[in-house]
Image (cartoon, rainbow, N blue to C red; front, side):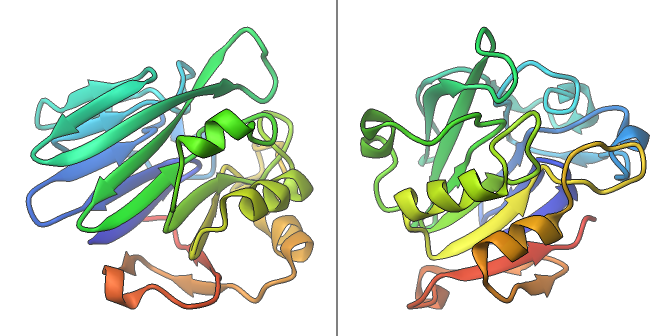
Length: 208
């Protein structure tokens, strides 16, 4: 499997038989990112904000999941878990886990608080974690470290941090300082189950 990062909270998972896009954004100039132009079989939307819900950018007529529940497409399973948004308690945020090619990937969306025991129970054995770290609209760097310690993933990929001058959330450097790990910077992540590290690894992906 390959994991590509568009920027902000948007990713693409490229599997043998399926492509999955998560949280595609619009108005890319506000985020310091490039416009998204890609195709997918499945699109996941964690919550209904412009910087996470631009399904129109995805060609291929993808199946869209945007709320809690259990789903399956092409033998790939998706689990949506209810949570709270970072700056709006009224707005639901869906954590998604994806079981794909013997790996479990979790994307936390705009998570606004540490996880409850019930949420953790639904997120067992996460291999790769996509975690927001910029604060203001999500958990901040210190809270992100706490959530990582709750989940105990093998690979940590930060997201939702400052990428441009118009963005008013914290840069990824603040999270790196808080977690105290040396990041590996990659253009994309190619990963299989046997490639998982014994000790947690921090990977900062370059935006496509």
